[in-house]
Length: 257
Image (cartoon, rainbow, N blue to C red; front, side, top):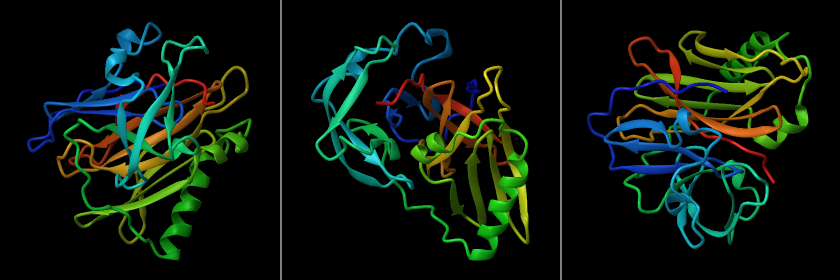
């Protein structure tokens, strides 16, 4: 879908960490020496998903992280299923994460990652209404085949968050997503539009979570998408100088079961 960019390592980063995306639970991101990168590089896409001993092992344990990067319990891999023929195996978690695990990001329990305080911003009704209008206006005319069923499966449409003095929001829908900063009004920082493909289907996006993956004090956004019968996740990171958000990691994706 997109290609991850390079990023300067965080000066005060966590130890190495390994993250899985939502259902299907394919490798998403690695934090190594303070830098975020895709767990499966673009050169390996379609040909495998890395060392199975690292992520596709029955009995391995993972911390579920909620919409704000807070621990929501421990998931244990109960089944590794290779029957769908995709490069990445399909993982089944248990006990409490057998259903609804697409709402979370998962980090290996032997990772250095530690949750920081939630960045959730309880935005007042006025800013919320203004942002939802901004998203609608930005995406209007992009989607030709509205995939409301798939979008509803992906979860909440918007997330409102803040760190330092900055207040921001991310919103997704059929055809793209928008990230904006709030002052006296909303100002778009980044947007990605995915017009309908030749088959007439647009991509659908939803923000899964907002939290600091690499310990540099700046949050990342984990965005989930559905496109061409495939679910996947990307990690977006902000350039503090320009305010622009770029993809720094992406999962191989697959068909959710």
